[in-house]
Length: 207
Image 1 (tube, rainbow, N blue to C red):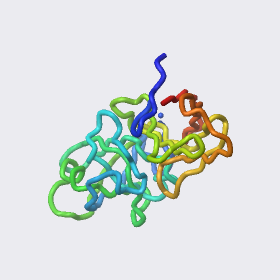
Image 2: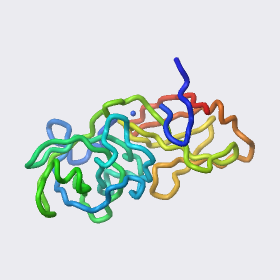
Image 3: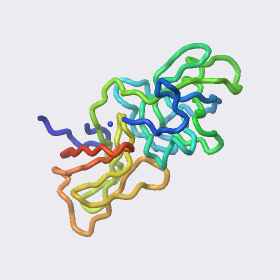
């Protein structure tokens, strides 16, 4: 299998969090609207949208389902009074209650429409159009300090190790950083991901 290439952008997960689940495995909640239109400005600090999803089609998630950044870049199918649309998680809504989402203007127009207000929605985590695991390398990464972001995250990311070493999340973003006393081989990083549901997958990533 061809090894993914690390660049300042991509390199090639799902589960439900299990709270407020409907009989079909989705969630019933409320939607509000907020003004962010660039995902890099959101709490996840997303560098690129999941492949196959429009970059500006993102939402802010409530605290419980944001899950300490674990849900960043997960794709969602959202249904409202106007229609159904696919979006992805790129931000954290501090004020939103469990199962509620804050939609940016582009998602709002497709799902709700009209002036900002509170509207009932149903939504669920779904596979992204391209559900192969991809990575983004943070600017400034080098052989002694690096940070990786998982994109197209279907299962959510609970834990990530690089070359068997633990990483730490940078703040509320979805970047997992490794500060190594010894230089690492940037041409061959062994990355293991543990999803929210406990599934583990291993990937070899090289520059």
